[in-house]
Image (cartoon, rainbow, N blue to C red; front, top):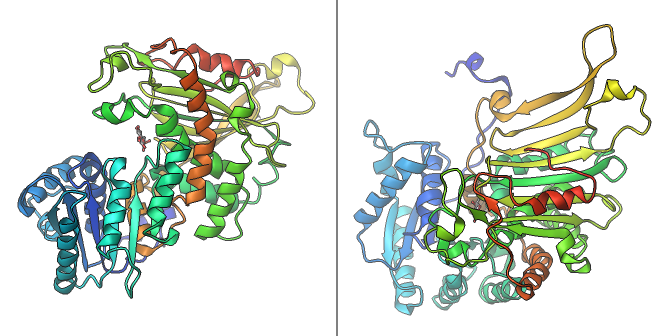
Length: 509
Ligand code: BG6
């Protein structure tokens, strides 16, 4: 029996979530980075924690010729590197997991490849008891998404029979509003909306899900969470990494598409949305879309007042963006972007949301910082309150996951002197463990048929409708003066200037 006293108090009584029904997961793009770095390590961790169904298997679909054994050996090396659990020789857990994996070689456009796939899936159903349930995961380059969906349809693999078929679509979902709408149309010509699971892995992060709990399971916040008390919000997603080995994709995308259209706007939506009537997919999606629609279109402003961009130069021993592999030497792609959003509804009118994200910044930190207004009447003399900042609630999305509240307190002693102090909640200390991997949650949710943490078609389109006017405006401007910040620095001066124009400053996350 477990020694209950050894368990951190807040973990006592936690129940394991329901194991999903039997199914086969088919990963398109099975030899790619996402499969190796995220998907298969997440599956192995789930397997080691008994959270996968016993009747389950993974079919890797890709163009390269190789045997099942060669595919498994390659995945073993990635699991060794990226999973929490390791395929150690002391146990046979890797061998058991590897038996669930097989490889299917075919071109993405080959009708014969899908016919063979259909046959193989039927054989696996018979041999493994997976009951005809299929989860198709598009982890290829995005230009293949529509083609694969169409071929799945043509091979009768998308039809709702007695079992279920679902399609997970990785980001990027389109590259602007027109292409996103077109992709939605193409996918929905084959799959029902209810079968389509558009991933934004930020939604699978424990701390992002906790925004729902923090806001809607506590009464004391609601009276404060609005324009009467909040001065502004700062949302930062800072990365220390550069483009790593993704220059080929990133140079055609840039920070606005890569981070803002997806992850940052999702953080805005969860921070600013109204309470849904229930925690089910439709109710949550409705509220998210409603608040995203309330964001004042950026084209209504002079774009240069509300958006600025940057690209990193060499610095602190790191190379410049333009010297990264598979990046054009004269690239004008932004690796940093800052913007100011205004949400035009009763709750938020007049409260700016400042967003910034960049690569090669001094620190890896994603944080939502709600900055409250100063007290209405200063009770204490100026020297007593000097250095005292108004209240802050900061949600540390990652790392050091947690939430703190900053407030003023009297310092010990005869004289009245105030200091800012913090009440701090940390996942690791309260729950005795760091939050799990986003992909584990999202894979299990898709297997269970819960799309709450995925994006509905209208959410993706409204996010693109906010970002596309900026892309169009940038395309008309003369080339920016890039590079404009050194690797290892906090972005271009334009980012500080933008917020300073409103009499505010960025706070370090
Ligand atoms: C991805 C982007 O969606 O998110 C990457 O394409 C970025 O460029 C990554 O590095 C950040 O994710 P995380 O989970 O490391 O914050």
